[in-house]
Image 1: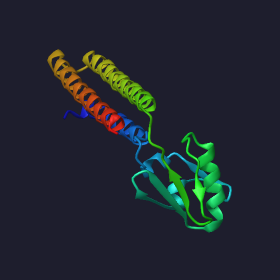
Image 2 (image 1 turned 180 degrees about the vertical axis):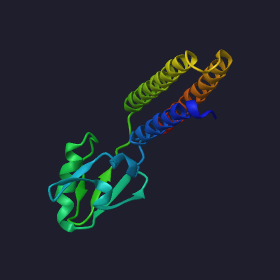
Image 3 (image 1 turned 30 degrees about the horizontal axis):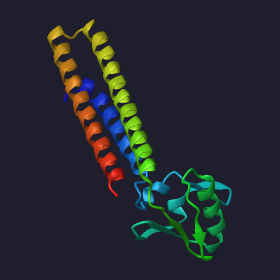
Image 4 (image 1 turned 30 degrees about the vertical axis):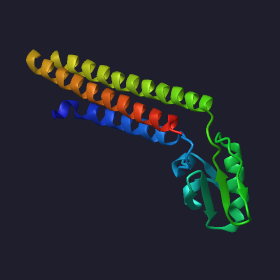
Length: 183
């Protein structure tokens, strides 16, 4: 790959990876520890990621279990989960917190699929914006020392790169939608 467009490929890769991590936070009826990745707990005055405060396990397909390193953190973790947008009430036995994920209704599944598709479209728009930036850069380059043929080749390479990422986003969106709709 040409060094002049490599930076745009890296930006597209970051955009795609970011989209995948957003997809991971959307729950599909199964307990998945990555759902908790955005939750911050007040740990002695410092907002700390939940994963750094305790051990998160999946003892059953629809249950997440959080065992804090310090028993005194149970209340703080519960508070952080309640104030998040998870919509799940934690229960605890004084040492361990359990999150039981209810079975998703068909309507909720359809809403989640819409959300996935919306995020997928936003990802494709971001990829196209990166392509536009790359093409603007190539046009400026064309006014200086680079031949029109070379610019044309670089624009083709940029378009192929864009098409590849758009296809990848469509595929990831489709897979996540299927996962959500599978009962």
